[in-house]
Image (cartoon, rainbow, N blue to C red):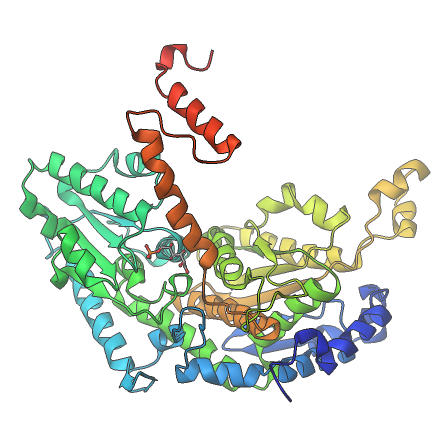
Length: 552
Ligand code: G6Q
């Protein structure tokens, strides 16, 4: 099979198009009624993750065809190429090896003739040593006080993973340390993160792969000024209060951070795939080296599953194929990710970057404009909160929104009946979405005729349920790897580069052109479009106005 054959010409794709018209009218009520074992049959388990995908609008034939599509799309070869260290990020000519970040010591993954695994473990050892010293208090600040506050300065991939992981693993974190995350160029972010902190007890981690990102460098300079102002202006204090995580030693040195206090990673780690690299230093400081390594082991377990399991039992492959099924055949535009776990409150935001930056692409690997939809919009909130707001649209709106429910069997905070109630809600939601409530059922409840349509739920709304025993560092690693490889699977089917981000790069240069036009003394020449020119003029005028005559 020629895998560069356009997606819409692959036999399985064509078969799926025909098949879609045959099955789109089938209701989950009927599918379950016809197959009493469906709930167990359409489930898969690996690495301690149970995936129930039975509440999807699929038949055995659908799954068979989707698996054929994976084969005809060369998914197996793509997986092997990634793990081998091939330069599969073609537009940046880079290998894609986040899987090497969690490879066990002794493994071998060769990039440009060099085994990178020992380098990974050398950085992990350096991180562990530093984390231990901060956690036990032998790493002191400039005035001799121990560090009590850690602030990660970074944005995008250098922020979303660290924040999400810190929140997710708070239960395991060192509570004597306060963790904050500054990402936004909006000065409010920095001001609020530091207003109650003592500079003498504060450590900044400047996390930036490139060490040139406008937001991060601006915040890092502001942090240095804040520190120096608080510590009497002694520039030597920087060495005890700033460390860097970067691939760019030259820029780190230029900023004034000794490379002895720099934790490196490599260009084969994409920003959104970097939370398990040195970018996770704040995570390691919070949960300790041992738990960090447990998280890496969780990642690795799912990597191995993805690499070796047959596709019909391969969790990320199944999830990726279902996403393709809804996005390309049902025309679904979004996927809701709904963790029934308060600690995962930032997980949907994290996934937004992982999925949308990876698969928000409009050309194939060959540079041809795609003739089909690619990455869906991912969004979500933790349950049960979402149930009291946007679930209305998922249940009774006009759009099809596949949902991923995520839940853990054991809570980290057992309090009375809370956890049974939480889990009852997640199971009930999946059930209600799938089966709905028919006119007859609503009538039987005694609703007056005029109210019946309003209270009817058509059902047939698909969901996956992902169930794990408990939220541990390893479980978090597994969950993230599950989605990373689902994203990979989708990208392989669509034949796109899931590992570049030219749309993000654009944003990095555009603003720098306008900054001097806003801050300069002279009225700038009107060189943009009429809308942008007018906004610039208005902003320059408004910012002169004093607060008293502001918003009257
Ligand atoms: C991630 C993206 C992007 C990146 C940030 C920060 O995949 O490339 O979100 O992580 O723009 O970049 P730096 O780490 O270089 O500051």
